[in-house]
Image (spheres, rainbow, N blue to C red):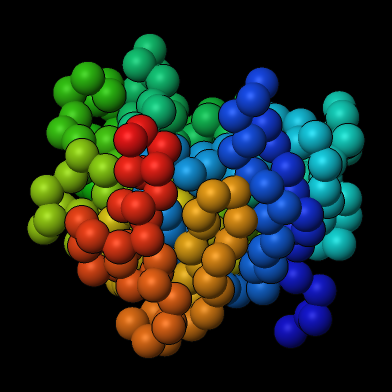
Length: 260
């Protein structure tokens, strides 16, 4: 396995006006890792993903994918990096005007120019891998449950066999049983295409199920990074408060300072 991180981030800063969201963030994601970044709402997890994808331009810092600097890339060079990445969006983000199979095959048809007949065959195989039956293929997104939409989104994320897959709050809006099923599918699907996974979530049950590593984002920085099996013994009071869902602790004190 290469010693070069799949994703390497150093001293990343991102602010919106006076709101400093990322403040010197450092993070490595090794090839084959399933890393989950945990943290509360509004801590900058989604901003981090958008910076890696080149959707946001940070004010300072370095983001490398396979050793290639992403910050400042434009046009075809940026698209080449994005082509390595698949993504499962928080709300699935399906195209309402396209059928299920067309959503799954979107990258094949529009980015790789795969003929529609061949693209449909690939889409059906990927759908089967996430437990969707062939008769679902011609349904429209409006006809699907929340859990089924997530499965379609996951099938779309793996259809082009990306090297990296981002998962944005994958269990949000799902009941615990469906959420656990989606997590199981995420682990299986990521392994099937040999991808490196990067997930952002505040759902600790989900984080434990899909990760081999965790990192906690707080006040714009990674304050703890380690193996999932070690998170319960992190020795970090912020991490301990967050993973146990305690109302009292250093995070609460910061909130009181801010609003009090």
